[in-house]
Image 1: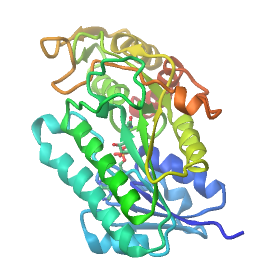
Image 2: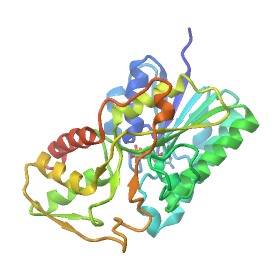
Image 3: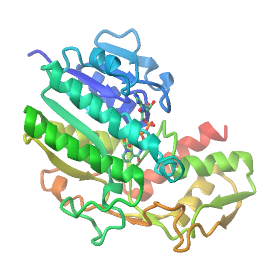
Amino acid sequence: MKLSLILVTGGAGFIGSHLVDRLVEKGYSVRVIDNLSSGSIENVKHHIGRKGFELLRGDLKNREDVRKALRDVEVIYHFAANPEVRVSTVNPEIHFRENILATFNLLEEARRAGSVEKILFASSSTVYGDAEIIPTPENHPFKPISVYGASKAACESLLSSYGYLYGFKTLALRYANIVGPRLNHGVIYDFLVKLRKNPRILEVLGDGSQRKSYLYVTDAVDATLFLEERMNKFYDAYNIGNDDWITVREIAEIVLEAAGLRAEIKYTGGTRDGRGWPGDVKFMRLSIEKIKSLGWKPRYTSREAVKLTAQHLAGIILG
Ligand SMILES: NC(=O)c1ccc[n+]([C@@H]2O[C@H](COP(=O)([O-])OP(=O)(O)OC[C@H]3O[C@@H](n4cnc5c(N)ncnc54)[C@H](O)[C@@H]3O)[C@@H](O)[C@H]2O)c1
């Protein structure tokens, strides 16, 4: 049986590179397109030179790069994006260009390529905004409170319309916070970078009561591949997260323990209602009943995922 040629956009990034590892291990031919804006060659260098693996340094904002990347591709995992929610409070245009425009270019070229059958898209829990129902099910309305969340919601709408009009099977993967080795942004990473600068004080954005759900990256990749095998609609969406959640205060304590430090924790207070920054969703736990009903469940809890990540990154960032 001939295995499909797979394109992973953003495959040199954190989640994308873990996905690439698994696809290569399964024997697929994998092409990565990445502009290395936040990703790194380090994340995929162990595949370079291997038969069936190809790395294109290219930008999804450039149609010619996208066209080249799509040659003979049957399955796309679209993970390239600017993933920093906070960026949109100061520069919303970044999320418009890197997320919406880039996704539009990809879909347009996929339609022209003629070989593409399936498109899986890295969406986010942020599409729901401050959800009225927690755990939040997939049929909860989209009410994003950040331009990042809005960009993901817009991309999902494009995905649905392209799926319907041009015959692709598409899937939106609404990830909770994903953590693990190679993580290059987010609260655990930020805490460790702050501790490297000042091991005596740990500044926490917000009031520390923010509570969210975390998933270890190997679980996220497992769920993604599990759903790829089952996708059969022009558009469908799944939450990918955990059954539990954890506060920022607890994360700060776990990170300090992993770092072997006794720093004083200082809360900035953040916005009036204690968020880290405007647009930060304060309480996030996704319902994962839909994916669980198909037979998938996470291996690690939020707490375990945070702990494993903190222990791993502490060694790298603090040395
Ligand atoms: N990490 C999380 O907690 C999380 C949660 C929900 C959704 N997501 C989504 O998952 C995807 C991967 O996130 P990540 O955490 O691995 O981030 P990441 O920054 O490590 O990965 C994104 C990759 O895309 C590349 N890229 C960005 N813009 C590009 C462009 N225009 N052309 C080509 N390549 C480009 C970057 O260089 C990087 O390698 C993103 O779409 C993100 O929004 C992440």
